[in-house]
Every structure is written in structure tokens, then in C-alpha cells.
Length: 139
View 1 (cartoon, rainbow, N blue to C red):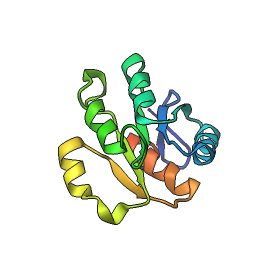
View 2: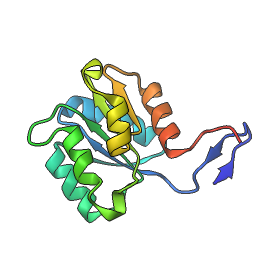
View 3: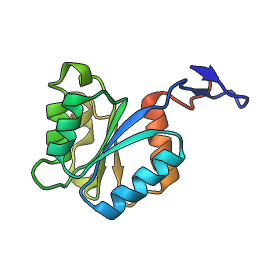
View 4: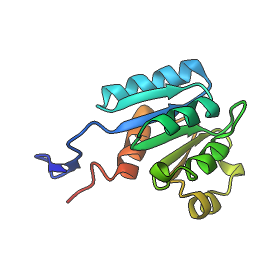
């Protein structure tokens, strides 16, 4: 970690983020903003594709939509926690149905870092990611 002039800490490497979102337009917006914020981004169009990427590679954080065909975001997180390399990888769930999920249970059972309600702003998303990664926190 290094310390910026404003006192915030930043990682010395580009954090690798896996974005799992079935809406192509939203995925493009998310990926564009994450790359612009300095992250290395890989995208997957559904949970199965994301799981394949997780089995083959290493990621610092997973960002996933909840409602997707083939595998929900929660199912993806359950599978992620079965992979030794990703047992503790921060996981942010994006959902239009935030009021319908039990975030406390997801946090306790699966270690979900945050459930971010849709719609969200790019700056709000970046802030949640930095918080989950422990980047940008005051020293």
C-alpha cells in the first residue's frame, strides 16, 4: 500500500475485478467506469461464465448482478466460496430488489461485502469497491 498526498491509501497494483452482469449496456457502463477509475476488469455475461473465469484466474473482487439467467448472483457467490482461492474474495451484489434480500444473512453466510441497489451512480459503485478492497480509507 502507498499513501497519497490526501492521506488515503492505495494499492500498488491494479485491482482485478470480475464484473458479472447479463445486461450488455449496463455491463459496458460499469466496465468503462471501473477501467477509468484504474481497475483491471474482466466481464462475464452470466454466472456460469463468471464461475469459469474464477476457476481459471485470480480476482481481487467480484461484482455481480443478482437476477441473471442460468445462475443468480447469490448462487455465483455460493460457488465462489467453494473455490479455495476465492473463499474470502470481496463480493458486491447488484440488485433491483434490495428490499427483498436478507443482506445480514448473506453477509454472515456468504461473506457478501455489500448489496448495492439499482440504479446506482458510478461514483457510488467506485466508493463501494474501494471500501470492500480497503482502498481509499483514511490512515
